[in-house]
Image (cartoon, rainbow, N blue to C red; front, side, top):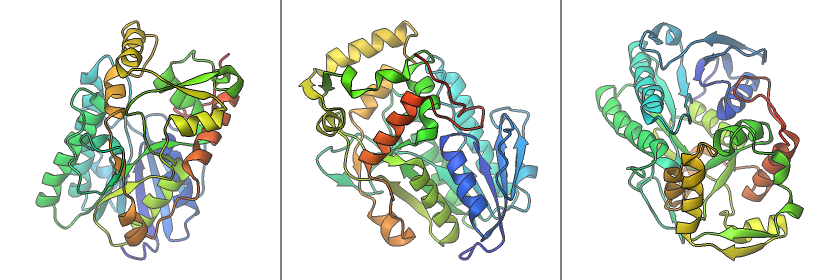
Length: 342
């Protein structure tokens, strides 16, 4: 599938943050004949060459094999972040649902499977230099998100041995943002009633500088381009995806015109844990622990083998996202629907 001419692509989780960007790019690609978007709720959005199928891949009663028949590739993006208070639910959706997708792709004889892994799959690593795709992917065990992403890396190891004819690609992007994802991500991580307007420089006289809080970011559209290139290029294996520069308190302080103030890790975690236990904050303290330990990623392989270059810097990504947060931006899909609070 080197040229991908006239290819038929199935995208799971097609109405979310990454899915909407991937579907849009594929629908505009002359080498793609058709896109089938799978989602729990069919949207009103109608991009060219795209048909929608409403399906809950987490359901034990669903066998997606028939939906994959005749496809040249499956791009698996479906994922649930919530509820963080009931990890059995996310495990059933994310892990068991993903394994169902993998087996269905093999049963339907789909030649290419592109899976959305994450920087969250990586074991704790350095913050002062970057690591390549050979860094261990055992995740942070206390965080459900990392635990699930890491487990699926092992599941794919087995899948590749059992189905060598399937070309498997694993994308490991940094934290993904775009203007249209602002409302969805505010609800997922900050809560439904967190006011977007609080993300204004004049309201932040200082920024907490927490040891270990140095991460990478990427525009979702840039990640989608890497997915598109992976379909058109005869590659296998994992690809790190991130933009420069790394995001830390100094960078955020410059963006907000605020002074970084050192805050002990334990104090920050205690505040997050209290809010999470009171169900005021959806993001768990376990995910906070993981973020402080995630390694910085080297993206050389994506540049050399895919010819991929992000068009947005991490600074531009965050600026666009914050603008979307204040404006309550979204898209015409159920997960991405815009909503302004405050």
